[in-house]
Length: 88
Image (cartoon, rainbow, N blue to C red):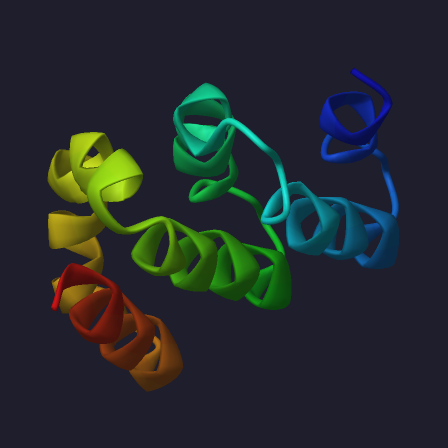
């Protein structure tokens, strides 16, 4: 609960660090919705952490494929690349 709350902090650094810490959650399926939500974060680095994290979740992250697919057409090249890697 604390890390999930930190994922909504006003500081991008706190949000990003919270997302990184959540990657070690014992139940990855429990964090997929939060990671999908963070795909809309206003900070590109925080979005990158969410994209990369969803890719690292493997089968647990498959539920996020519909949210990741549109990012293949994002303005930022780094976002497009991260989405492509996450989807592989």
